[in-house]
Image (cartoon, rainbow, N blue to C red; front, top):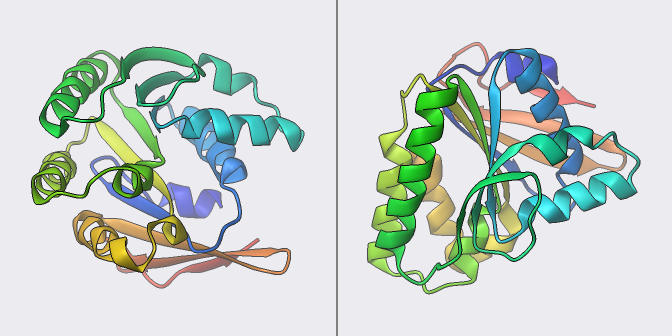
Length: 211
């Protein structure tokens, strides 16, 4: 998997789409370890307690989870504190305020800690647990677009695609259009398959890794 992570570069927005209902805690643990080994400051964007859920499962699976407790976190919604929470945006009802508070905390963190590996968890939950209004979609897409090419950070979104359902699939399509790299993850028995379906690097597009 290091070959796959090593192909990513600063300025990218990467989607890692889990195409089945299996968990992503191992991938999260591996990605965080890789980021630290490359000199990144790791920041988790935790939507509706997704970080707590994944770290709890990782502990139950017997992984070394010490790194989770000291990782910087911006929380969006949720109730459970996990990691070093530097900002907690609890009100999800007003998209303009939510995005304004997020940008304030995120920009300050980038300025002080670049280069940053931002790992966003549970973004799909925002679309399935709230009203999907055109204004909200526009603001979310504008926020993502703003950071494409920003070489202070590399952002990886871990997304569970089945949670969106067919009625919200178009939202994922819109995010995919902005993304620079898309990796789809599926399982075949005990074998995991990681397929790069979109990349800004021609030699990486189409790459398939089985592990």
